Length: 247
Image 1 (cartoon, rainbow, N blue to C red):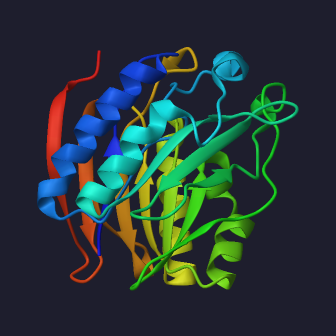
Image 2 (image 1 turned 45 degrees about the vertical axis):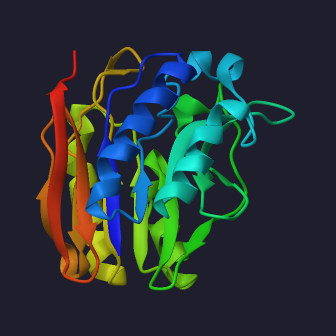
Image 3 (image 1 turned 30 degrees about the vertical axis):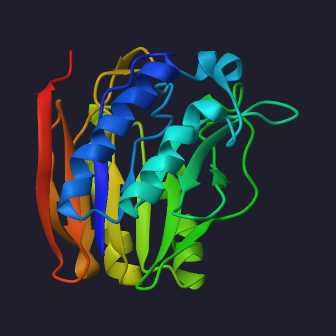
């Protein structure tokens, strides 16, 4: 199975512009037979917690319909990040689009203390089932918690998709965590981080892939947008596309 982690810069607060950019990146991956593509945390709005309540929407938002069409056209699972409406504070969410199937939504279960004023936590894990794999979703802070990875493994996940919005100072620690989880649980891990504006600073990039035994097989740089593909059959990873450096 060919999986893609996208490293991209979001336009702060502009869902329509980000939808268009995401669609462009999906189209870039499609000719390479990508079967799943996923984006950084809150990729459709940018990671800006104070803005989340005003931007929060629901999985059936018509602005997202393009992803369902692209999923069907290319036979691809597409996973995007955005704040999701609840009766209280919004969730940090991911919406999953699958060919000829209903949309799925996942909400981040473990929030960082800084996120508690703006968001509420999700309550259950979500696994994507394919013919070859069971893929667990994880969002930033929770993806660095040993119990979250252990729960995914206990549910039969062999691939862990970490959608993050991390700044440069935290990346070395994140790399160490993902290598340890891949080694401990014999899971393949893909991490998609943002570049560009991120909560008053800039995303640290360095999206990467790990295979079992904790071996890191490919990495993007800290500033450029790009698409990192992993072939789970050969356990090889390639860079599909790089755009200009993020401003």
